[in-house]
Length: 323
Image (cartoon, rainbow, N blue to C red; front, side):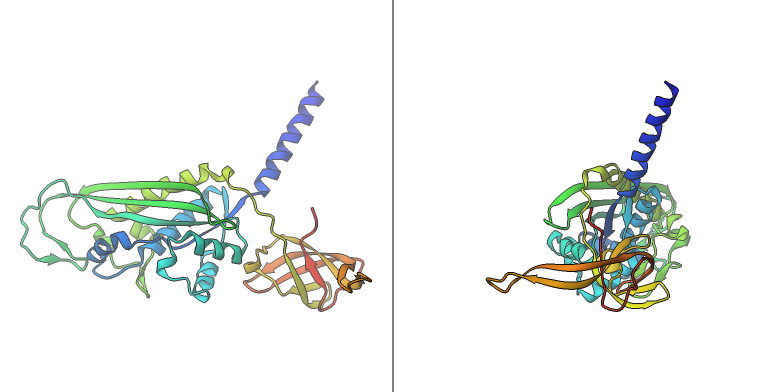
């Protein structure tokens, strides 16, 4: 009986390991913040892209929980720039779906920031009617301030542009004082109107605490819905661009959906079989050479180690193995 129990446990562990290998691959685009644009400008005294900051923060939380395989943000931003992905596209499921197909993910996460600011429960005390500090927060004196942030997220199927999952999160933070950014303001900004919301400095501020709570609530809902997403069958196909001492360089990379650890079959085109009646090619005969396991990958190329009986050369075909 013990042997049967042990065998069952092994099968369950194997099934669990297999499930972990089939993580859903997602990418998170910058959130739309047009609804709260005026409030953002009043808090930071300038236009700050809080949509990018919230997306970065959400990615950090999703990576930490490990339910998804998340597409690297810097690589995504380069592709968005090349594809002229504008601010107006941030909430567009159709455009997001096209982007997702381009980078080979299962789904795209897009969203909106619907509330971002303060909600004070008491009146100002000792207000002198002038703007204090660099962030345009009016009034001085003893006062309790509350920061409220609300965000909504949608997971879009990249094949149909259909919204599959929705999630939302609200965060609140209260303390004495009048500044939403407190002593943390102004130390995490960088060029291009971007504010690093993943920094500890920002997280310690009143508005930072609210943003973190909203992002955590949203991430929990997205994690809980991971099983509802289907894993796309992506067939990778490219060519050997260089071959030297068993190390191959391929002409496909991260943008095609390739990642470190992937294994592709290596083959060489052979004869073409044509229909004698029409002359149309009905089959191509290929010679199987072996496999290549990817060890390095960038946007447009990949490096891998070849194993097999053949001798790969430039122009040979690399392709996802048939299941």
